[in-house]
Image (cartoon, rainbow, N blue to C red; front, side, top):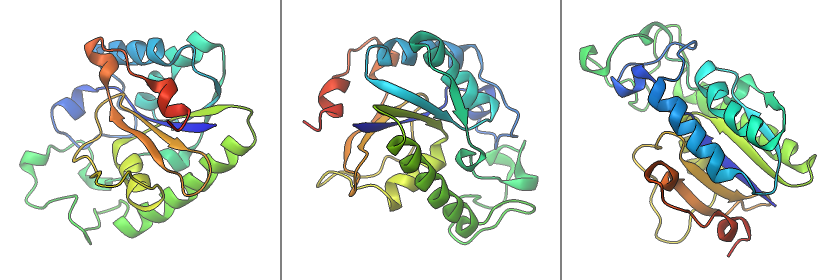
Length: 204
């Protein structure tokens, strides 16, 4: 079976390009996106849901949990990168690039610390999937999913990493090594399109 990686829905702060505090909730648009996501994934052989326990991730996971009747297990390892004292500030007001390689935000996580945590998160995802009988849905954050794509997953030949993971985007990967990516950063459900997730889950 497979693993479905899901970025949380939109928040007022990510729409405004603000580095988000941990307690940031979804906005109304994000709630609607989460509901569209749940409709898309209902009917797939999802056996478990694992989510970051940050409100924006939990609020994204809840409609899916309700639609398929499964509880949400949580993990702090799936948290977004901690930008420390920069949280709550907009990108436009900063005189540094918080995403720059080698930059460590005050009272936050360096890239090295963040990537080490993502490695632990990925190991937990693999272990959780191994203990279930079907597909695992994982709700997390944009930088976490991008770090997994960069380091732990195999992209299709010629595929490039997206500059940004779309809100409630779906990325489907093989549960077994080398963890081939079958579908990446797909948000077709937000435009009312029907995505062929069953094809991705079957590994083509």
